[in-house]
Amino acid sequence: MDEKIFTVVEYIGLINAFFERQQDIKVVGEISELKRYPSGHVYFSIKDKDGEGVMNCIIWGRNYDLCGVKLEVGMEVILMGHPNIYLKTGRFSFIADIVELVGEGALKKAYDELKRKLESEGIFAESKKRRIPEFVQKIGVITSLEGAVIHDFENNLGKFGFKVVIMNSRVEGQAALKDLKSAIKTMRKQDIEVLVIIRGGGSLESLQAFNNEALIKEISTFPVPVIAGIGHDKDVPLLALAADCMVSTPTAAANLLNHSWEDAYARIRQVSYIFTRITQEFKRINSDLEVSWSSMIDHTAKQIERIRERMMFAEQAIRQNDPVRQLKLGYSIVRKDGEILRSVRGIKTGDILDTQLSDGNIRSKI
Image (cartoon, rainbow, N blue to C red):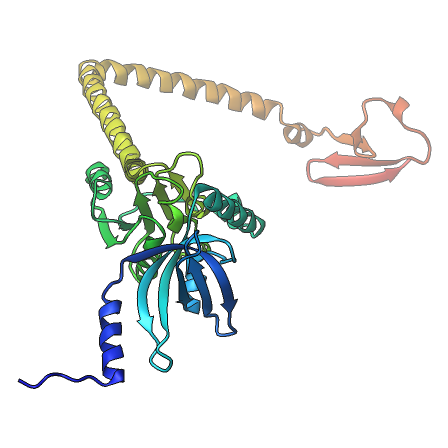
């Protein structure tokens, strides 16, 4: 059997192919050198705290922009990615796909800085919040299908004919970033009326992906209202602050979507009850009417006769007191400046008078 002999290119390719399959490798260290090129790619080194181990690292520009962490010399980070040997030089580097900050203090500092930046841009403004529509039926959900979160949501979602599109995604730590961003972009193409992003509670470290600027900008420009059901304790995830509606649990998100339907059903039941009572009362009144129908007809006829007689008397009175009737009898009405004269003391030489007769007016001068 012939022994396999590799060329340098073949062997490096074989090693790199093996390395690329090791996607979940995590390495922690302190940044000792750093340079970002115009291409956006960042070349840096990390070392152990005692300085004994040093490793060259690269993060490509698109991944660096996505991670939302501004690398600085002296910063302690966790890198997730895979090793690589550069064919032209044989140089070993670690290709970082994801960068995480180490330590609660560093995470809190980054959280506060990004929160201030987004607040100044109006990302969290109440005026930008969209109202969750009533009687939603088409729901998009982004969450992990592992664990109790999705079951809590589905078990509490009412039987109102909801059509739910679920997108599976990591939701834990900085490693969830790519999954979440991909899921949100996919959801943009779905026929949904509201987007729900849910996960359980956790530490600031486990919620890093939900404090990412690129992800928050995706949410703030999403075409339909967004509900964030991301459990939290002290520091509310910035994605939840940017969402149109923020609740603390997946169950609360389901109850929110149920509300308008449950309210409508309650109103229908109330109207149905009132209608039943009215129907019952009408049947009782109808029965009473049948008993007293003839007496009511007699009473109504008498009332109509009385009204007719009163109208005749009123008509006679009106005719007798009609000024036009008096004029036809030979009387006249004299006015000065539109006012009726009742005495000669109200006029003087030179006044203009209007005299109204039954068939016309006479204007005269005193």
